[in-house]
Length: 250
Image (cartoon, rainbow, N blue to C red):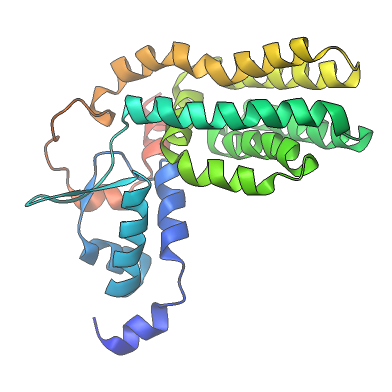
């Protein structure tokens, strides 16, 4: 690609776009590709494309394989467990601080998120529901003036997010359970009930995915790391929406 084209496309934030495609499961874990594929599909030069892949590799979302190429990282349950621990540890303290300082107007904001989630539940829109779930929890960080911590969780816990989204798509009651848990948290806050009850619902909400892991791994074993490199997939997977393909199979 010429230097003029690279200069023209250097402003494209291919890192953010590609990261979103990976985390939102538009791109199937285990898909192989080349830097040329990324440049062509995302319309960027080699330099920004390469820089984006390096950053994504540092986050465990892309894997460089000698003599094999580059791969959208498969789901590593050990890493996911550590990412979940990071989020839980931070958010546990956020919730405790939140209870002591939150304003009544925040309840309305949380309730609005829940209403929107219920609409997504009716439409079975897992991806939008997923975004609203993050929006719901970000309210706690914002109210406690800890948005920096929210950004840290977002950056460090991308693999955990992929598993969360996959669970919403394949587990029949995952979205309805999340709504019920959110409602219970808001009800507890509105009634100014004790912290222990709030933390019960919070813990149930964040830990539920652990009970779903076995079912998900059994259904999609090829998406998970098992100590071996999977067979190379056709890079045409880069042009397909993996999550929608799951829905179409039912």
